[in-house]
Amino acid sequence: MKAPYIYDVSLPSGYDENRVYPVIFTLHGKGSNEKNMFGLVESLSEEFIIIGIRGNMILGAGFQYYDLKSLGHPIREQFDQAVSQLQQFIEYATDKYPIDAKHRYLLGFSQGAILSMTLALTMGNLLRGIVALNGYVPGFVKTDYELKSVQEVSVFISHGEYDSVFPISVGTETAAYFEGLTPLLTFKAYPSDHGVLPQNQQDLIAWLRQNLGSDKL
Image 1 (spheres, rainbow, N blue to C red):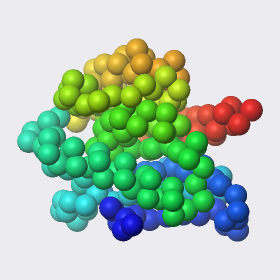
Image 2 (image 1 turned 180 degrees about the vertical axis):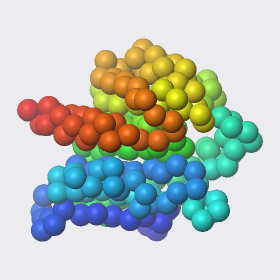
Image 3 (image 1 turned 30 degrees about the horizontal axis):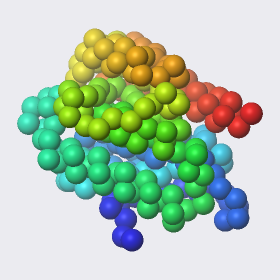
Image 4 (image 1 turned 45 degrees about the horizontal axis):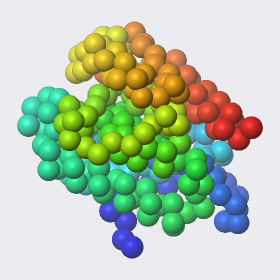
């Protein structure tokens, strides 16, 4: 099977093909690329396989997974295709690399966060957890998609209090939506614009380590 996306993979040094590892799939924001998110989780590179997925549509000097009709309104056909192809990619990578299918995490920023949350809702407990930074869930996903239970999916959502792209109200509404779906929700707001502060990075790293550790007890 050919990979549905171009990607970058980081394997733990001296990794053993006879054992399996947890994985973090990273999904970048509009106009970025598959290497952009690695710095956020580089400190976990000896514990996790880290796979950065490049959007397959060119946008300026970078890429995107889908285009927009207007801010907050994805082109539905492109969005649907991205969700389907990302699910295929996750299964492709799980077959290709020594990945523990019970410990698959998504980390997304902005457009990547939107897709990460959507994939949690469509894949359910096929994912162990997601980190969604400064995103939202499109209305048509909530009403038109066949949604799976996320009762056992750990969800970390963060948002900038001064986000000039998606206001903080979007973040709080998104957190409230997931609060009604899973008891495993963490929501944090930071004094930032549409970006990730060092404290945000430290918190998500700690959350991933804690989540992985508690799941193995």
